[in-house]
Amino acid sequence: MNPAKQAAQKIARQMAQEPLEILKNAGSQVTGVETSKSQESTSQPRTSDEQNKLVEHQGELQDKMKSSRRMEAYQRELEDIRKQDLFKTLQRRISEGESIPLEDYSELSLEQKQVLKAQMEAVDYQKKQAQYQESREGGPLFGSAKKGRRFGAGQKQEAEKQQTRVEKPVPPSG
Image (cartoon, rainbow, N blue to C red):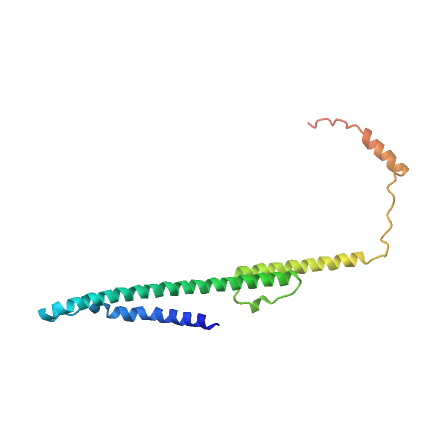
């Protein structure tokens, strides 16, 4: 991991824990504790200053929370991209004929594993078909001799008979 990424993650974790601690004493900071009238006039400007600081601080906290959420979304997106790259790489390797143990890849979803398993089965089937074709073609060197297609005497008569044949009507059964 690079140092910038580590620092960003550390800040995000710290910000996620800080808001609760700051909000614990926010009520007393906003309202202030009044004890007498003389302090009221002097505490009034301080509370507005404190309110301004509190508002600024809350704005900073909201910005930090937004940035931490964005960072988390970014991390999830990176993880999804890594999974897709792994899936595509495994698909390519399987199509090249490599047998891959899918149990070793726990980061893949169940659907992705099923797709890869089906692809491996299809590749295995294709290999077996190719082997079968090679074994059939590996027979006689010049292939088998075929009989000619000429009509013999009996075949010629049969063909003519079929052409001139007339269907006889069948009496109705009743």
